[in-house]
Length: 235
Ligand SMILES: Nc1ncnc2c1ncn2[C@@H]1O[C@H](COP(=O)(O)OP(=O)(O)OP(=O)(O)O)[C@@H](O)[C@H]1O
Ligand SMILES: [Mg+2]
Image (tube, rainbow, N blue to C red; front, side):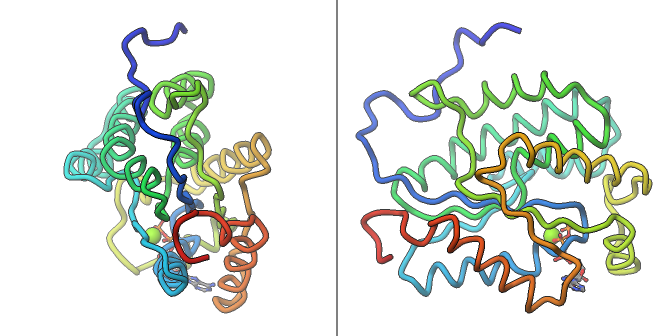
């Protein structure tokens, strides 16, 4: 595939060399434990004097939340699903994530592009290279690079354990209603993505007591040097 000639980089060339914030994502299959810790991590950053945007995907803007509703309820072919995911992501990046990072703030997102590779790429078997092309378009940076999280906390949990945790907890959405085999492929998709970009990934053993999971989350943030980032704010 060729590059889109009219794709605009996410920040304009006139943007000054800004203090870059910190971008942290939570990933893992449904029921892995992401939401149980994400608020506490936001609070830990705030306690250190930082401004935090806590957000999620798909979603995070009015438009992207509308797309989320469609994505989590309506059946559609895999390409439509992938395109809507990236359309929602583009809006989320331009409206929320990039502006916050340009202000030197902390952005913590419950899922981001790794989930698209895991669910659409792994779970649905959608073409990995097409996803990479979409990623490069949607997350294009002025320097020619692709926006990626500074740290991705991957909550790795066996699908059977996750299913047990979620059983009866709430009405399953479109993805949560998928088969055990689907979630095994999703987990394999996360593992593949982690192996391809190991520097930004921290694999969290999610099959541990909550206190230990939380300790591992904090250790991962510290070990990746994230507390020192975000110049201009208290470290
Ligand atoms: N370490 C843990 N041990 C046992 N149960 C846990 C643990 N962490 C979370 N849970 C429970 O597992 C369930 C799923 O947790 P949570 O909602 O945080 O997962 P999630 O990754 O955010 O899921 P989803 O992707 O569906 O939003 C909840 O009922 C939660 O209380
Ligand atoms: Mg959750």
